Structures are given as C-alpha cells and as structure tokens.
Image (cartoon, rainbow, N blue to C red):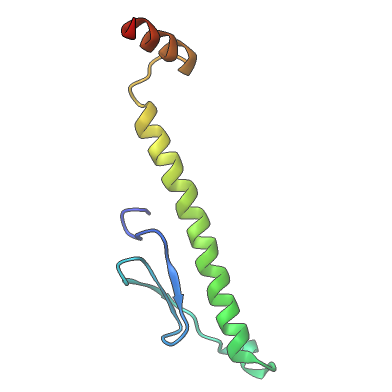
Length: 92
C-alpha cells in the first residue's frame, strides 16, 4: 500500500477528501445520509474525515516501520545478538 499512498495523508476540509503527501486524492468524505440531519453536520463530517486520515496514517506508519525493519534485517540469517557479536569481531 505504501507504493500507492505516500505517507502521511491529510484531510482537506475545503474539498472534503483525503489526499496523500503528493496531493493524490485517496477518497471523498461526504456527510450524506444520517449526518445531514444532525446539528453541526459539517463539523461531524470534518471530524470523520480527520479520524479516517489518522487511521490511514497509523496503518501506513506501522507498515513503513515493518517494511524498513524487514529491509534492514533481510541479510541476517541468525539472531540479532549473533550479528552484534559478528560485527564486534570484525571491528577488532
């Protein structure tokens, strides 16, 4: 997903949509349905947009962390402790 959506994403209140860092549109946030009958419907819609953007960012952030960790450790065939020991020996 990180190749499609550039972290972080933002909710655009004017356009009522969520965009990534490159301003690629991810999705529309529309307050139709139940929200339009509620008091402060525009604010509710914006709160939902912010909530969804935050949720997407949390997921992308954890995926970025895991991807980076996997890339950093892909060459390790043994435990991290063994690799630390191996690096110590090489430096001496």
